[in-house]
Length: 594
Image 1 (cartoon, rainbow, N blue to C red):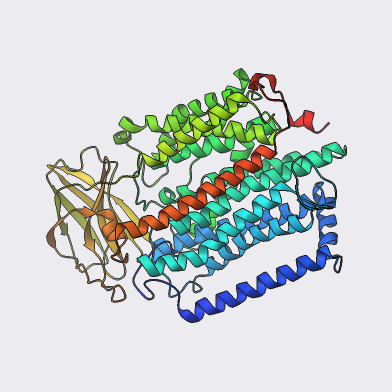
Image 2 (cartoon, one colour):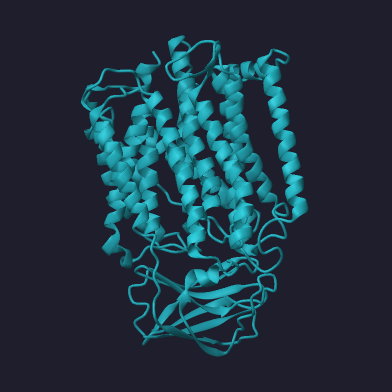
């Protein structure tokens, strides 16, 4: 996935021989899987049956859930490792000589393909016995719901790769993580964690009916809940690597959403302490990734939120409000997450994050509270579905629609980006040095007042540096030890209100685009321009409506995708009579397995 760009060939799209080679491999794999599936269903091979039985013995889940869950878990770990390695590689080194020249791409491809294969295996292992959640393919072949959802998520994610190449050819290589095809790939892996959770719960229900639930299944499901938190946090990498292209307000909003969506169902479904356990798994995985991708592989360090405060708040709310009241519990938990939880992350951002949250966020930070409540309500609905709540709970339907509308509002509000009028005089102590002190004088001097970020960013020169600009007075600021020259792209970046702008300090020539060099000078005055004009340096000059077609297509995919997951979660509910109130519903993991 070509997330970040730099000097060098190619500037958009893979070479023809690479497309042919990749297409050939894909066709062979698809044909092989089709043959294998046909052979299994016609009893010409028992390999899958034996593997399923072995997985069932080890995990305690039925074979149709055990083997797909094992494959999906491994595939997700491979994909998430490749994803964070890939982003760090492109931030530090820029674009690749080709899509298959970067080893991290193979981890992503195989990981996402593995998710689809896991779902496919679950479909093949479908049994003769019908359940309340299974989908009947034909007489004697009932497929677990989670397997179908896994396969759909995996196929959508894998489909992002060829579409990504088309996008690059049309618009140039895409520097933003939130480009349509990138969201498709990352979102596929992220939402597959929820599909995996559905599959595991189906398996646990099956074992409960047979009276064969093993205690280890609770541990297994807790790890899946932690994986769901990992997935819900994936798109925050835009900020985790400290080269964001969108408003900083997105960061607390997305944190609150992720915490509500993932931690609330963990507490509802798995009981006391489950939210903290899910966070523990999240921190272990993200901590290992930060060490491996950063110091071990020598790339930019990956930062991450803590979520500890949010998990504690969810547990505290559960002491006063019965988690079986899914919507009410979710709403109150979300309110705590969006206020006190965000305050805890605010402190953490000023402790470890490269780009900390400042007081400039305060006028609009209430949006994070709205996001927390909406995420908590949605998390309550997910928890209710996984817990088998009746399908016709009035409060759940109304609250779910309201939460969905609020989430759309929270994500749409920070999207518009405006320009800021002004210029900067940039002075370098030694323009010929590899690293130097940079002095920036703003015109007007108040331009950076109440800035959400104001720094010097240097990247794609063999690393990344985000240097703080220390105020000297009268609109003058200074940063030390800033790299310039070579392949570095060095910018003064400013974000105030809805404006995100930049002034180039140094940018190398790039004949492949083509783009001329922006030289480093001892002193030069340059106007602020839209930030993306410099970060999206390789973007092609295409009509804005053309790109909107791409985003609209992604929007359509997302709508269908979410509708599919909503359909799946609805099937997880009991067939209770209409007119229930959530206060009539009571459930616990222990009760469901005895």
